[in-house]
Image 1: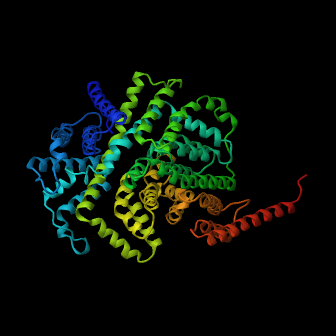
Image 2: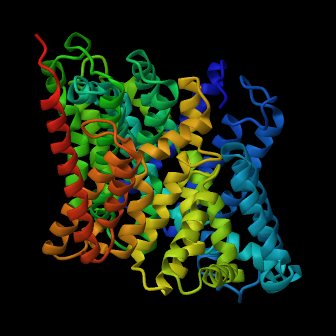
Length: 627
């Protein structure tokens, strides 16, 4: 991302960013424009930012804007300017009846090409190749062989679908970016400027620092708190990992273990309510449910993710002799509690969402409160200058999500026009046969593959568009199916061979990203099991009766404990291979959707732990007494 020394240019760019952010705040407060128009204004505001701040290549100037980027920035606004000026003509036209004019055809081509180039600059080649392929397929699908052979569509029909309707670039994902997501990005920027991030770190240090393996537990707690707000695993690693990874290394953790713990903790932030990143808002829109439904459904799996990680870290620390931090190295409780008012914006936001308020209204209230509490936080008071800094920071964070959603819209438009999604769904059904588990495995693999190099939001949107219909046809509930896909799109951040979060952690830890990714998967192994469990059992998503919910909480808690002990390989002492395998097997049984299996897992698993406890106690009694 470019940084400029030209004061005039910085002022003009800052003004553009602030105006765009203020537009979104205004529409959040007083009502959004017509859907297509809101999305058009949103993307037209983002395009110049993308071409001005993100260079063409690594060799392009980083401190000035080449003339060709100014040209691209200007050209990219033209489709939006045309759409705004001719809004009535476009909004009231009849799809596939009214002809596409030459001006609309040319501007539509410009829009697609600018979007693909912006995608390459901001998000790299993977999403660029995927969106380009689907755009190419819309025009040339009729020439593909075999099952991939598509219908014959003219270029005008393709541009109409992508540019002039709400089925393509301006489909629902970009709509979510233009409304909910942008508000919460502003909220996140206000929290950061108001000093909530440093307070999270101090709070985490105070809560977990003195316990066994304290530095690692600080990484888990702080990344959980920060990641839910930031919505990005890589950003989470760089924000908290720069502090936690060196701290873990100083207290004896191997670099690969320190990096793996931070990678696992940062990745899971997108799975933890209340916010969960942009993908969760897209899921809410896909399902047509209030966002609080997503929050409630995701709560127990997220608690299992972080709870089992903390337990595994605890037993690994006991096994390897890691200790906690000293009292002198920790912030005072009085200092932490004095600034606990900084949590007020988040608490009010959660309450507003649970009360059924719209995410935009809840986010707007949170933004106002974040500014308000900053006035009482010495060193972080948001006067006029810091307020503008927060608005500019928010504006710079929008393009990546907006371009990702718009580019994913090309895929959605291609699926809507050509029906390629049904072909891929039929292929999945053929490969899985009558096995629902195999279908889940293939969809999980699809989500992880798309997540290799793609932002979580894009990976989820594309995988959901291609795979969720196959799962719902097999009888899985839509909420379960969408959350399943979302989980594996998120977990792709720590899944080899790409594992973006592990590469970020590797630069800080100074160790192999692949080794860090494998370590992160081992510590966060429950996250790869829980989605299969809740796909079959809605009670894990807190969707059943209170009796079913209580029962599944008990069995899931025991399952998480057993898996933590088994994969750590330590209980009261180092475990033998047979006992580890048995404990892991019983932990998996406790996640089965049928209670007979769960009861067997509970009985055997608890029995093994009790036996190991008595065995250790008996062994200690035989030790000679030390004089």
